Structures are given as structure tokens and as C-alpha cells.
Length: 408
Image (cartoon, rainbow, N blue to C red; front, side, top):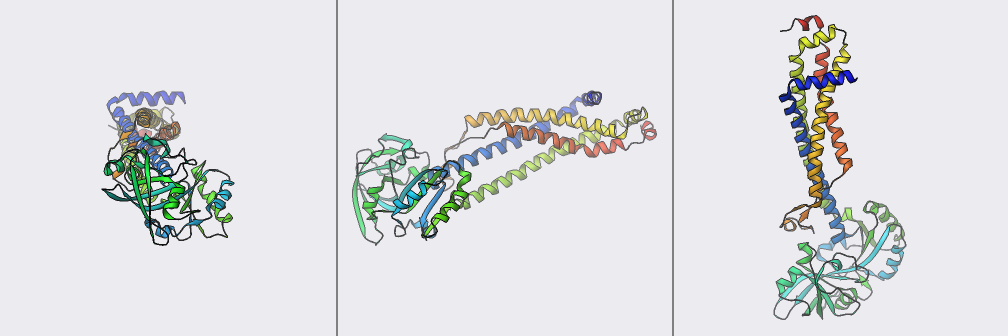
């Protein structure tokens, strides 16, 4: 085998320019495919994590009929006696946190200006590690003391207000009446998601319940798990335990179905592009090997006349192609891996990214670096190279020694 390997290497070196062009084409094609794959994987993972953390949690529970009208944020479809429900949920396996929340439309009035925004009533102590609590840039986070609120940076700029200013909140109760309360801005948050920073006012759950006159009620209960992939199985358990009650249980995949369908379509497009790149590299290998066969007809005839079998001839050409694949693969995973490693740390910043879609995303995107991915794509380069050489190797092995020696 070692003899055949040396022969294959020498044959490739006989035409250095053609061999170099072929392995560079393989390498650059692999760099392109690897970078696209790693970057898309990283962005999808980042997007999914952010979507779960900032918007849906892993599982959401609502009163029956809420999701159908969720865009209107109805407060008349609420979970009553939510504390007993939380106790049942907290006992489930995989559950890290159970968070009661109250979402509602609210009008903020500063006296001279008014603006309609999304009100979010939540438990400040339970969500001390949440996205709002960890992004306070001015003032302080909420405590148990009533009468305080948090707002986003852009919302504060739009209303020309800051920490310590007073706001009047006006909202419609489940019975259709208007109610208002006064709150003081205790802190300003900057999550990096324009959909949150531009339009969310957060206040303690008791204050939200007082504003809406919904004592003991919430519009949703959000669960965070220790593993996002376990959401479906945990949701099944919840549905079984709450079967006697009138609840809707949805996972993050169901809540973001339309968005994740778009992501899947994008991955399919990248797969098509990758296939085209691989096909071009494959045709390059086929062309190189066929040219080598036609140039070496007499040489092949001589080798077969000296006792080399057709199988050994095929092995020789397959080894040549495998060496090209290995060289191109090393180049591809070397450059591609370095790019992925760099962008997995530095990322790519698109300052207006959060304005492009109606979901919370960050402005810096990171690639995903994985040694396993590099290994898989290096192996793919070998497989493609060997498969591409099958036909040229077959042509070479079918040469008749006598006719091949007469070839001019």
C-alpha cells in the first residue's frame, strides 16, 4: 500500500499546476461551505436562545382562548388562582423556574405627552436573573416596595424622562372600565433588543394587578427548563396534570412556529448553495483525474504489462484523488476553522439588525465553532474526492495493455 501511496503522490507532483488548482478549488469550496454552515448554526442557536429568554420562555401556559387573541393582549382571559397552578408546576422535573406574568396594553402619561406601550407585570424577586433585571443601566432594579416601574432606554428618550420621574398609567380592566395609578421610574434597562427597549414598561405584579383590578390573576405562566429540548416532554406532563382545568400549554417551538419555519427555509437555501459548491469541486476533481488518465495511457499500459492488475490501477487513481481531497480538506478546515473561531468570539455587528424582523434579536451575531463540525467536513472532502475519482479510475482500469502501449 505504501508503494501505491508514493506512486500516487509522485504522479500528482508531475503536474503541479493542475494539482494545485484542484486542491485549492476543493479547499476554497470547503471554506465557503464550512463558514456558511458554522455561521448559520451559530446565528440560529443565538436567535433561539434569545427568543426563549426574551420572549417565550420554554413553555407558556394561558387560560383557554388566550392564544387566539394574544396579539390584542386580552386581560379578560386570565388564569385565576395562579398560585395553586405554580405549586403544581414547580414540582415537575427539569423545571428551573416558574414565572407568573401579566401582559397588558397601557397608556403612559407624563403630563405633557402620552404613549401606548406594552405593560409587563412580573415577580421581581423570582426574575432577578431575567433579561430586564440583568440589563439595568440607570437607577435600580425593582424591590418589594410598591409604586415603582422600569422602562427601556429608547422609551425613556422618546418621552424625555429619567429615573425619579413620575408617570401616570392608564389601562382598561377586564370589565371594560378605565383605571389609573401613579408610579415612579426606579430604573432604566437596555436589553439590546429594540422591541423591548422601545415599548416595554415593567412593574411589579401586585402593581399591575392593582392597575387592572385583577387581584390573584395573571395572563400567563412561563416556565424555564434546564434543557430546551425537553420542552415537548415536559409540556405533555403538564397537559396531563392540568387535564381537569381549562388551560392552553404551548412550547417555545409552537409559539415561534412561523419564525422557525423561516429559519428552516433559510437552512434549506444554504444547503442548496453548499450542494452547488460541492458539485463544482467534484467536477473539478473528475476533470483533473480524466485528464490524468488520458495523458498517461501508455504509462498505464506499461504498468499493466508489468503485472499491475486493473484493481491496483483503480486503487492508484483513487489514492491520487484521496490525496487531493486530503490536501484540500486540510486547507479548507484550517482556513474555515480559523474564520469560525474568530467570528465565534468577535462576531459580526449589524447595527440595524433588530429593525429587520419583528422579534428580539441582538445586533452582534456569532458563528458556532465545533471540532466535530471540522472533522465531519474534512471527512466529507475525502468522500467527495474518492467518489469523484471512481469513474476516471474505472476508465483507467479498462485499458488494454497492448492498445495502451501503442497510444500516441
